Length: 263
Image (tube, rainbow, N blue to C red):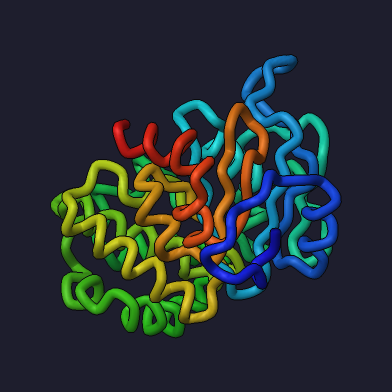
Protein backbone atom coordinates (compact mmCIF):
# COMPACT_ATOMS: atom_id res chain seq x y z
CA UNK A 1 0.00 0.00 0.00
CA UNK A 2 1.34 3.42 -0.88
CA UNK A 3 0.89 6.98 0.30
CA UNK A 4 -1.89 7.51 -2.25
CA UNK A 5 -4.17 5.04 -0.46
CA UNK A 6 -7.20 6.89 0.92
CA UNK A 7 -7.23 7.30 4.70
CA UNK A 8 -9.44 4.78 6.44
CA UNK A 9 -8.65 1.82 4.20
CA UNK A 10 -7.03 -1.13 5.96
CA UNK A 11 -3.29 -1.57 5.95
CA UNK A 12 -1.60 -4.36 4.04
CA UNK A 13 1.14 -6.72 4.99
CA UNK A 14 4.38 -5.32 3.68
CA UNK A 15 5.58 -7.08 0.53
CA UNK A 16 8.77 -6.88 -1.49
CA UNK A 17 7.09 -6.24 -4.84
CA UNK A 18 4.99 -3.42 -3.43
CA UNK A 19 8.04 -1.89 -1.75
CA UNK A 20 10.14 -1.99 -4.92
CA UNK A 21 7.39 -0.28 -6.89
CA UNK A 22 6.55 2.38 -4.32
CA UNK A 23 10.17 3.18 -3.38
CA UNK A 24 11.12 4.45 -6.84
CA UNK A 25 12.59 7.94 -6.60
CA UNK A 26 12.67 7.96 -2.79
CA UNK A 27 15.01 10.41 -1.08
CA UNK A 28 16.09 7.63 1.30
CA UNK A 29 15.40 3.92 1.02
CA UNK A 30 16.51 0.67 2.59
CA UNK A 31 16.20 -2.61 0.71
CA UNK A 32 16.17 -6.04 2.35
CA UNK A 33 18.37 -5.04 5.28
CA UNK A 34 19.96 -7.66 7.48
CA UNK A 35 21.85 -6.00 10.32
CA UNK A 36 22.90 -6.39 13.93
CA UNK A 37 25.40 -5.47 16.59
CA UNK A 38 27.29 -8.78 16.59
CA UNK A 39 28.38 -11.09 13.75
CA UNK A 40 25.79 -13.77 13.19
CA UNK A 41 23.24 -12.13 15.49
CA UNK A 42 20.83 -10.11 13.37
CA UNK A 43 18.21 -7.73 14.70
CA UNK A 44 16.93 -6.75 11.26
CA UNK A 45 15.90 -9.63 9.02
CA UNK A 46 15.04 -8.38 5.56
CA UNK A 47 13.67 -4.96 6.47
CA UNK A 48 12.47 -2.56 3.76
CA UNK A 49 11.76 1.14 4.14
CA UNK A 50 11.49 4.23 1.98
CA UNK A 51 10.85 7.93 2.49
CA UNK A 52 9.76 10.11 -0.40
CA UNK A 53 10.63 13.81 -0.66
CA UNK A 54 8.69 15.78 1.95
CA UNK A 55 7.24 12.75 3.74
CA UNK A 56 6.97 12.18 7.46
CA UNK A 57 7.31 8.43 7.99
CA UNK A 58 6.62 6.82 11.36
CA UNK A 59 7.94 3.48 12.62
CA UNK A 60 6.16 1.69 15.45
CA UNK A 61 6.22 -1.81 16.88
CA UNK A 62 6.71 -3.77 20.10
CA UNK A 63 9.86 -3.55 22.19
CA UNK A 64 12.70 -5.45 20.57
CA UNK A 65 11.22 -5.20 17.08
CA UNK A 66 14.34 -3.49 15.70
CA UNK A 67 13.00 0.04 15.33
CA UNK A 68 15.97 1.94 16.76
CA UNK A 69 18.36 -0.56 15.17
CA UNK A 70 16.86 0.32 11.79
CA UNK A 71 17.53 4.04 12.29
CA UNK A 72 21.07 3.34 13.47
CA UNK A 73 21.69 1.12 10.46
CA UNK A 74 20.52 3.91 8.15
CA UNK A 75 22.97 6.25 9.92
CA UNK A 76 25.98 3.93 9.82
CA UNK A 77 25.96 3.10 13.55
CA UNK A 78 25.00 -0.58 13.14
CA UNK A 79 26.69 -2.88 10.64
CA UNK A 80 24.53 -3.89 7.69
CA UNK A 81 25.41 -7.47 6.73
CA UNK A 82 23.30 -7.58 3.57
CA UNK A 83 20.93 -5.31 1.70
CA UNK A 84 21.45 -1.67 0.79
CA UNK A 85 20.72 1.93 1.80
CA UNK A 86 20.50 4.60 -0.88
CA UNK A 87 20.24 8.38 -0.59
CA UNK A 88 18.82 10.06 -3.69
CA UNK A 89 19.76 6.98 -5.70
CA UNK A 90 23.35 6.80 -4.45
CA UNK A 91 24.36 3.87 -2.29
CA UNK A 92 25.49 4.84 1.22
CA UNK A 93 25.39 1.42 2.90
CA UNK A 94 27.65 1.28 5.98
CA UNK A 95 29.16 4.70 5.34
CA UNK A 96 30.44 6.60 8.38
CA UNK A 97 28.04 8.81 10.28
CA UNK A 98 30.04 11.98 9.66
CA UNK A 99 30.05 11.24 5.93
CA UNK A 100 26.28 10.74 5.98
CA UNK A 101 25.79 14.06 7.78
CA UNK A 102 27.75 15.82 5.04
CA UNK A 103 25.62 14.07 2.41
CA UNK A 104 22.34 15.15 3.96
CA UNK A 105 21.19 12.75 6.70
CA UNK A 106 20.60 14.12 10.20
CA UNK A 107 20.15 11.94 13.27
CA UNK A 108 18.79 12.69 16.75
CA UNK A 109 19.43 9.83 19.19
CA UNK A 110 17.06 9.10 22.04
CA UNK A 111 19.53 9.80 24.87
CA UNK A 112 22.75 11.78 25.38
CA UNK A 113 21.78 14.00 22.45
CA UNK A 114 23.19 17.34 23.66
CA UNK A 115 26.52 18.57 25.02
CA UNK A 116 25.40 19.56 28.53
CA UNK A 117 28.45 21.69 29.37
CA UNK A 118 28.04 23.81 26.21
CA UNK A 119 25.55 26.60 25.66
CA UNK A 120 22.63 26.29 23.29
CA UNK A 121 24.51 28.35 20.71
CA UNK A 122 27.64 26.23 21.09
CA UNK A 123 25.56 23.07 20.62
CA UNK A 124 24.20 24.51 17.39
CA UNK A 125 27.71 25.44 16.28
CA UNK A 126 28.73 21.82 16.81
CA UNK A 127 25.91 20.87 14.47
CA UNK A 128 27.64 22.53 11.51
CA UNK A 129 31.28 21.94 12.43
CA UNK A 130 31.81 20.47 8.94
CA UNK A 131 30.57 23.67 7.31
CA UNK A 132 30.98 26.58 9.76
CA UNK A 133 30.19 29.09 7.04
CA UNK A 134 26.57 27.92 7.17
CA UNK A 135 26.14 28.86 10.81
CA UNK A 136 24.39 32.24 10.53
CA UNK A 137 21.93 31.13 7.84
CA UNK A 138 21.11 27.87 9.58
CA UNK A 139 20.86 29.60 12.96
CA UNK A 140 18.18 31.80 11.42
CA UNK A 141 16.33 28.75 10.06
CA UNK A 142 16.45 26.95 13.41
CA UNK A 143 15.46 30.15 15.20
CA UNK A 144 12.29 30.40 13.14
CA UNK A 145 11.35 26.88 14.26
CA UNK A 146 12.54 27.20 17.87
CA UNK A 147 12.52 30.91 18.84
CA UNK A 148 13.07 30.07 22.51
CA UNK A 149 16.48 28.61 21.64
CA UNK A 150 17.62 31.91 20.21
CA UNK A 151 16.29 33.87 23.18
CA UNK A 152 18.26 31.60 25.54
CA UNK A 153 21.22 30.93 23.29
CA UNK A 154 23.79 31.59 26.06
CA UNK A 155 22.22 29.17 28.54
CA UNK A 156 24.00 25.88 29.15
CA UNK A 157 22.18 22.89 27.69
CA UNK A 158 22.68 20.93 30.91
CA UNK A 159 20.36 23.31 32.75
CA UNK A 160 17.44 22.72 30.37
CA UNK A 161 14.45 20.45 30.85
CA UNK A 162 14.21 17.19 28.93
CA UNK A 163 11.86 18.70 26.38
CA UNK A 164 14.07 21.74 25.89
CA UNK A 165 17.09 19.51 25.37
CA UNK A 166 15.15 17.63 22.72
CA UNK A 167 14.57 20.91 20.88
CA UNK A 168 18.31 21.68 21.05
CA UNK A 169 19.14 18.23 19.70
CA UNK A 170 16.69 18.60 16.84
CA UNK A 171 17.97 22.09 16.10
CA UNK A 172 21.58 20.89 16.05
CA UNK A 173 20.72 18.08 13.61
CA UNK A 174 19.16 20.66 11.28
CA UNK A 175 22.27 22.84 11.13
CA UNK A 176 23.78 20.93 8.19
CA UNK A 177 20.59 21.34 6.13
CA UNK A 178 19.69 17.63 5.97
CA UNK A 179 17.45 16.18 3.30
CA UNK A 180 16.26 13.56 5.78
CA UNK A 181 16.06 13.77 9.57
CA UNK A 182 16.06 10.54 11.61
CA UNK A 183 14.39 10.87 15.03
CA UNK A 184 14.76 8.07 17.58
CA UNK A 185 11.98 8.11 20.21
CA UNK A 186 11.79 11.93 20.42
CA UNK A 187 9.01 11.93 23.06
CA UNK A 188 10.54 9.33 25.39
CA UNK A 189 10.67 10.41 29.02
CA UNK A 190 8.89 13.72 28.46
CA UNK A 191 5.80 15.07 30.19
CA UNK A 192 2.53 14.86 28.22
CA UNK A 193 2.71 18.59 27.50
CA UNK A 194 6.27 18.38 26.19
CA UNK A 195 5.41 15.27 24.17
CA UNK A 196 2.73 17.28 22.40
CA UNK A 197 5.23 20.08 21.80
CA UNK A 198 7.74 17.66 20.27
CA UNK A 199 5.12 16.28 17.89
CA UNK A 200 4.04 19.80 16.88
CA UNK A 201 7.66 20.79 16.24
CA UNK A 202 8.33 17.59 14.30
CA UNK A 203 5.47 18.39 11.97
CA UNK A 204 6.69 21.99 11.66
CA UNK A 205 10.16 20.78 10.64
CA UNK A 206 8.58 18.52 8.05
CA UNK A 207 6.47 21.35 6.66
CA UNK A 208 9.61 23.45 6.40
CA UNK A 209 10.85 21.01 3.76
CA UNK A 210 12.71 18.30 5.68
CA UNK A 211 11.76 14.66 5.13
CA UNK A 212 11.52 12.79 8.44
CA UNK A 213 11.73 9.16 9.54
CA UNK A 214 10.66 8.83 13.17
CA UNK A 215 10.73 5.88 15.54
CA UNK A 216 8.23 6.50 18.31
CA UNK A 217 6.95 4.68 21.39
CA UNK A 218 3.77 6.80 21.49
CA UNK A 219 2.33 4.82 18.63
CA UNK A 220 -1.07 6.47 18.33
CA UNK A 221 0.31 10.00 18.40
CA UNK A 222 2.96 9.05 15.85
CA UNK A 223 0.37 7.62 13.48
CA UNK A 224 -1.78 10.74 13.88
CA UNK A 225 0.90 13.02 12.45
CA UNK A 226 2.80 10.81 10.00
CA UNK A 227 1.98 10.57 6.30
CA UNK A 228 2.80 6.89 6.24
CA UNK A 229 3.68 4.33 8.88
CA UNK A 230 5.49 1.03 9.24
CA UNK A 231 4.84 -1.60 11.85
CA UNK A 232 8.00 -3.60 12.58
CA UNK A 233 7.95 -6.97 14.31
CA UNK A 234 10.98 -9.20 14.92
CA UNK A 235 13.10 -7.19 12.53
CA UNK A 236 10.67 -7.42 9.63
CA UNK A 237 8.00 -5.17 8.13
CA UNK A 238 4.61 -6.40 9.33
CA UNK A 239 2.33 -3.69 7.94
CA UNK A 240 2.62 -0.41 6.07
CA UNK A 241 -0.03 2.16 5.18
CA UNK A 242 -0.95 5.82 5.71
CA UNK A 243 -0.74 6.59 9.42
CA UNK A 244 -4.46 7.02 10.04
CA UNK A 245 -5.22 3.80 8.13
CA UNK A 246 -2.95 1.90 10.50
CA UNK A 247 -4.71 3.52 13.46
CA UNK A 248 -8.05 2.20 12.23
CA UNK A 249 -6.95 -1.24 11.07
CA UNK A 250 -8.45 -3.97 13.30
CA UNK A 251 -5.44 -6.28 13.00
CA UNK A 252 -2.97 -3.52 13.85
CA UNK A 253 -5.13 -2.41 16.79
CA UNK A 254 -5.44 -5.94 18.13
CA UNK A 255 -1.86 -7.08 17.63
CA UNK A 256 0.12 -3.87 18.19
CA UNK A 257 -1.66 -0.73 19.30
CA UNK A 258 -3.31 -2.37 22.28
CA UNK A 259 -0.02 -3.85 23.45
CA UNK A 260 1.84 -0.60 22.87
CA UNK A 261 -0.79 1.41 24.72
CA UNK A 262 -0.45 -0.87 27.76
CA UNK A 263 3.35 -0.57 27.59
